[in-house]
Length: 187
Image (cartoon, rainbow, N blue to C red; front, side, top):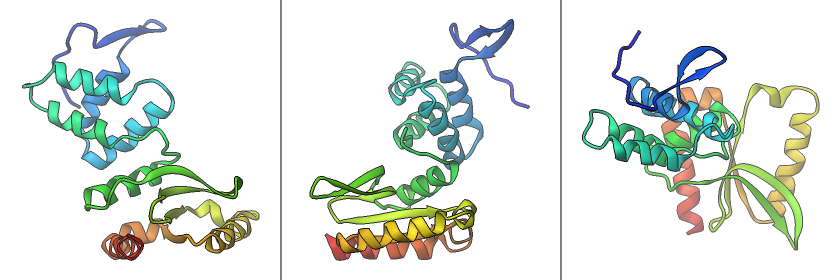
């Protein structure tokens, strides 16, 4: 349990229950969670259009000088409405914190104006993509469809790196090194 002072406008009525506003909730998340986990939830709130990064930056700026305002500002700069899953958010934020340039999320790759694929994370100038492979990829025909898409991307001269939950958990540094090497080769 945490206790904090609330500013005017930090609370609203939701069906007869007093709750903090989405912006204030993001402030609290930035204070109490580690940065990666705070961004995971903030990405979700932004994706659901409950808050914007600009809202968060403005709130943090208004609270400038108060303990924690820089944490919210940092989380807001790392947030991305394109994140489609908590694991994609975790991967993206950890990569950026590890010094990898920020990727484009949910990037659509075309060749000759024709759709080839949409990838989780991309560095379009280098033609490098990262796909997060969750457990659902083994179900149904998803793995088959993913591999067809990968083959199309290879034909379009893209490097596609795959990462799983296990790799993210147990060998993040190794994966980040592979990604940095691919980006260097293509720069």
